Length: 86
Image (tube, one colour):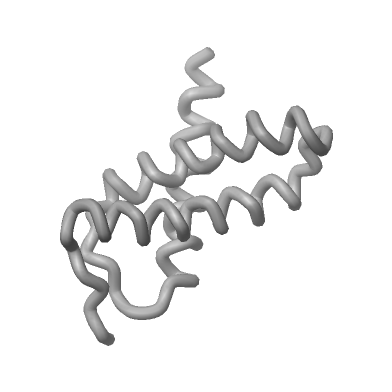
């Protein structure tokens, strides 16, 4: 159980970081929120694609990053934080 939680946190960190790298500009978002958005994205994709497609690992990772990108943009819109030009 503990290993699954730690694995989800590490996966969320990676997915959130990749999503932030893909998005243009600098996002004004904390590392904690990056992890939270990454973990939630991974869980959503795991549930939806796991049931629909059988859960192929690479498709799940790519879909998780896409969902995390969308979630970061939505989070920025809700909190009123802007993307900063580099």
